[in-house]
Amino acid sequence: MIFSTNELTKELIAREGITHINVEPYEKIKIATGQGERKFTGPAIIIVNQD
Image 1 (tube, rainbow, N blue to C red):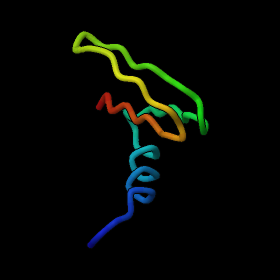
Image 2: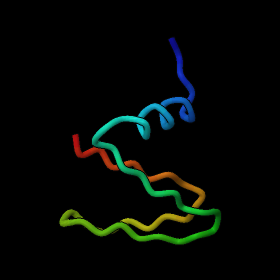
Image 3: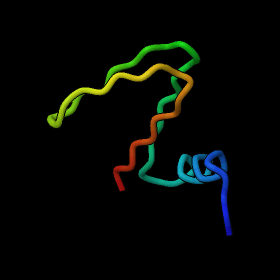
C-alpha cells in the first residue's frame, strides 16, 4: 500500500504522544536544539513524537 504524505500526517497527528505545530504560509520559524539550528518558511506542519 502507498499512502500520501497528507494521509500519513493526519494519522500521526491523531495518535497519542504526538504534538504538532501548524506554520502558516510565509511564516518564518526557527528550531533550535543542542544539535544546532534550522530555519523554515511555511506552510509546514511540525510533528513532535514523544512516544
